[in-house]
Image 1 (tube, each protein chain N blue to C red):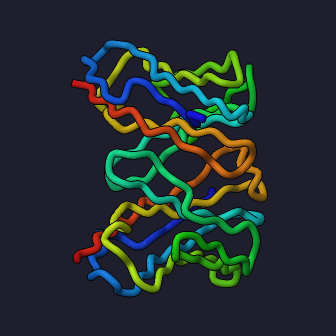
Image 2: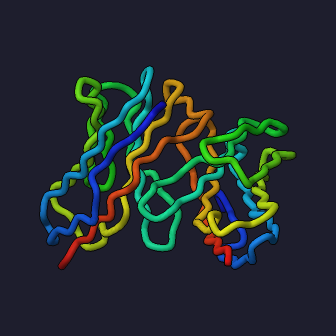
Length: 115
Length: 110
């Protein structure tokens, strides 16, 4: 079945550092790929998404490119802020992104940004 | 526009008790989902629904039941609570792809 593997955390960085959180996936067909962010005590919020190969999703300075040849969707940000501290989840939606049967999530990466 | 509303936010149950976690959405989304989140384990799909009157099992359905009598509501029922059901539960809805999550219910079974 479908699966998502993302780097283990916690990841601790200093403010203004460059961020990469790795995500790779296994899926049949052509899934859509997502990054969600969860702040303490809150639900998940969609950060960005990509629906086909070579698409780049971007939002709030974060970006990720759908790489079908390497089955990857790594999250990057050029200069992180303390407010970026949260748990980040990589996820995929099967059935060509129609999503009727739900998302498959990675285990999450806890990001800590120190001032 | 409230989005996805879950109640209660917190609950402590004794082993063997039952309860219903409520979920309501006001976006007229056809698809609704229940996930559980365990520490370090990501989210696992419990049940989902593609429309009123239609439900199906996800990855971890044992010990749970759902119903979908209206487009808006998708309650999750625990009949005989067990310690293994201690978790944070999230409801989500989607028109088709693009999910909106509720803020979660933290359940402890003692």
